[in-house]
Each structure stands twice: as structure tokens, then as C-alpha cells.
Length: 74
Image (cartoon, rainbow, N blue to C red; front, side, top):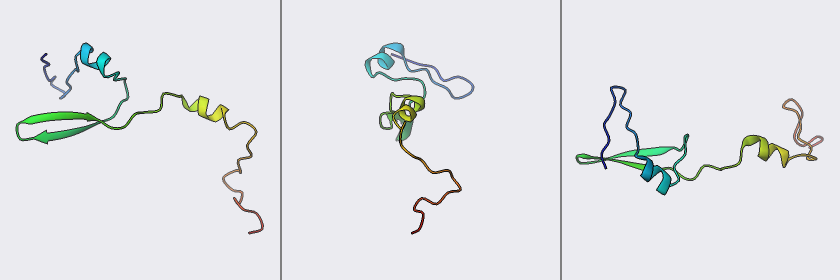
């Protein structure tokens, strides 16, 4: 497979590779130079849950306001 770099320095990863590796918009990559090669390495796995889903799991937990002490009386 081949790809062409745009005038903005962007390269499109072919669909077959994106699907095989389950790459999603917003995934982060490390760009590594190896002599005359450029290698993209995905950095970690982003959580697939949205922030709103994480926040829903916090219901019922008392979270102090930013201007309140975390440990009153300590």
C-alpha cells in the first residue's frame, strides 16, 4: 500500500490498516525516525468510555468544591 503526503504534512493511513488495528480518530501516535524510515507507533489505548459515563459512576460520592478543604479539621 502507498500513501502521499499532503502540502500540510498529512498522510492518510489506508482504511484496511485502520480497520485491522482498530484505529480511531483522536488516537495518539509517537513518530519515530529510523534512518530513512518514518514509523508511527500508537501510544496506549484510549479509554472508550466518554467522560460523561465516568462522571455518572460518581453519583452519590461527595466531592468537595474547589475552595473547600479536602480534610476539614486536619
